[in-house]
Length: 482
Image 1 (cartoon, helix red, strand yellow):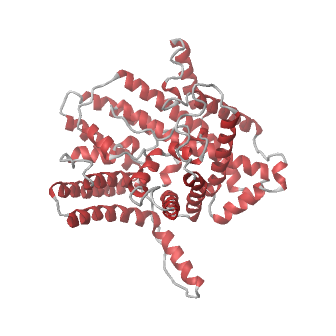
Image 2: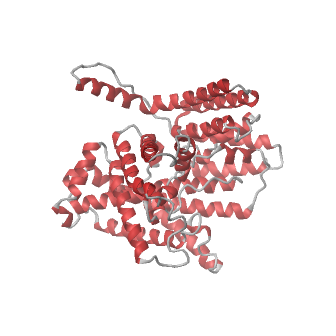
Image 3: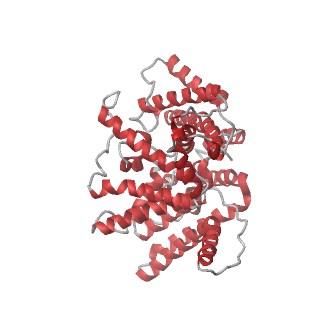
């Protein structure tokens, strides 16, 4: 079920009403309703894969119970690795089986041996990368004794399957989200209104910004051999805002929807395109995944401690694994490695934690130095997105070659100039609103609070109207494929 669909527009208010009608009943009834609603939400896409979520839930709940009273370290490690292998085993099969098979065959053919093996027509379960990491956080934290294992199977099931963030995050830690299912939730009008504002902004980002940018980005990437350099440059710029509007828009809707039900999810994006270096970008982009890899992979490997060789190794591991998490394609691995190359000079010179606060704090405009740093960081990010969006490595290299050619200075080839100008105008408005609200968790959190109620609500109404009238053709969220 898509957030930007009529189905969800009907589903949400029904679940919301039933949920708060149960507020004065037993807490388990509320949690049970969340589980039922979440399974309906996910099963709307393909009910067959509900068994995967249920199996993963049972496995990790059971292992958590076993870890409760187990003190033998070998047994505890065996239980932990059972959880890891089961969860990553499912993820590996559905997401990477054909990738490894094809590369295995290619490797043998390179040495003159032809192998025959058939790939499988495997459907990738939506959100498997997200809920797999979420359940793993529970088992790992219980193993490390950072979290007391739960005895409440319904609460744990609700934590694993919580529908607002089930299929594309944020990837919640068990230490943050699970305890919220133990506490009685009382309807908070101000929290609900704040949630609706964030949902509105998320829908605007997805439907108006991302979906309209997608139409141009797809047209240009799918016909890149026929495009000149300036058009190719526009194509990757459109994709840059498409993926940000699409993914951060999903996160805004997920976080806002959670607030309607009395839950607080972590911030997943913090205006990453205003970053002054790549380290800052990765502190602001897909925060839930970046911090997951930091805490459960990077730090256990030694982090930034130890020799220079170890720092380089750990940096490449975390970025390449992050790239591979996104998909079974060499383009994602190159994208990850490229970001590691961007990041290493900052780490080795100990400048990776220089820009910890928002840019131009206390000022409306950045300094020239800050602007140039943002421009360089944005340019490096845009270049890396080419590999992320390209169909394969050959396509990416061809696309880059096309940009850096003499045709870069020719006029862009645009099929619909009117739509093109409208989208550019919308992007400028979008960037301006994000810039003005960059000191908040999302722009509308405090923007307009000093305006009169009439002006403020007129502004919200305008955003809602623009979303309805100018929303592009309905498209799946990009991160559903991951």
